[in-house]
Length: 562
Image 1 (cartoon, rainbow, N blue to C red):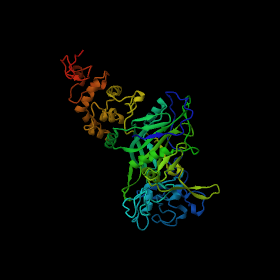
Image 2 (cartoon, rainbow, N blue to C red):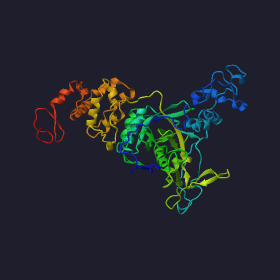
Image 3 (cartoon, helix red, strand yellow):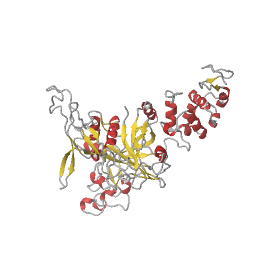
Image 4 (cartoon, rainbow, N blue to C red):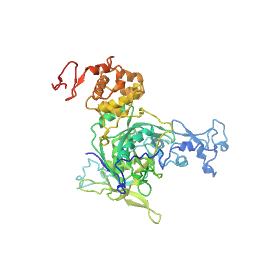
């Protein structure tokens, strides 16, 4: 069974949409709740040598800019300035390095950082005199513990030993990923082309790598290098993810390219003015940022991609899998908003305790216990009309308690893991647009890309997937050398693979589709002219079998040549 995701809030004013939307909205990189650039903002103006606790006007934390490998935030040159009364080798309370989890420092960045990084959180737990000797990050469980023999099994009996504890939802103080960055605009632009041409929503998996995010102490950044689009059924207000038989192969090829699945992305776009190229601003503080069904889907993905952690008895804790939504921003342009769901939400989704509300996308609903399943009580804290803090039962539940927002950005200087072409190879699973991956499209791609550097031609994520997963000539067992060449950007390795029999066979298959490929005039695998060989052999019009010259009947189907 595939997953079905209904995008709430997209049911109004649909009649004005055309079948093809020739829109090219401006892509805005930073999210509205962005925290990126906090470290750069600390460098503005003159260096200040004051501290807040002494009652000075300026913010003394702006001098803390450098961070060493332990995550400590060291003072800039000059230390505490006028407040210090020691030599250059001394330390005092005004210039001692701050810890990476220091809340005052994070709150005084511009803009403030609401969530410390996960590694800073671990540093906080493992600090102190005991160095975290007794720290254990326990994964939340909503299921009855097995092995209790003092009473009959549920629903006939339950005790305090096997009963799971009640859950009170709190804002998670840390996050596993602090920034999401697309390597270049082309990655996102090609993904949005599907919506521009059809008006239907679309979904894809983000493949990239995790790197250091220097703007936040001990931060982690998810860098996106490619988007894989799985089989799906998209409409103007819903998405259904179908079973993907190639999922395992895609992960394997990505791993050989030095990439991994870091998240998923989907569109929630409604055209507002086709002449101006604007989209509707529908996700905001007055509606919702993620619907309950989207939170459940994100929680399911995060449970499939656990984060390895040595401090957890289970060996894993949380997840670094991210969610990106392409939706309208306050300026009615396309914005990319990044999120994760909390560890509490992951536990509720894993143990099937959380449901969406049919008529309110911003609300979830904690299931009630039944004879088949015991569900612990779920609470959240709220403020009543008198200003008092009260505890509410999560039936229903505002999903804001489950969401962690993450800054989504694009770099000033684009990075290209894969080459960019004016005539790129078609993206997989876009048959509804008439864009198919076959040897005719491969031959067309090769004929339009006449670069003398073979690595630039072959370095395309979607092309590499086609070479591995096509049914005619799959190269899963013989493409490792080419993938290594693409990963290391080694033209010599790519040329070595080009001389293999596998590429010669690919060239022969491309020559049978009737597309004149100038690039195939070069020498192939055996050192001879591939054009001369293809001119001598002929393909059967009935079964497409390649026959040797000098024969009038097909060697496979025995039908005449003409």
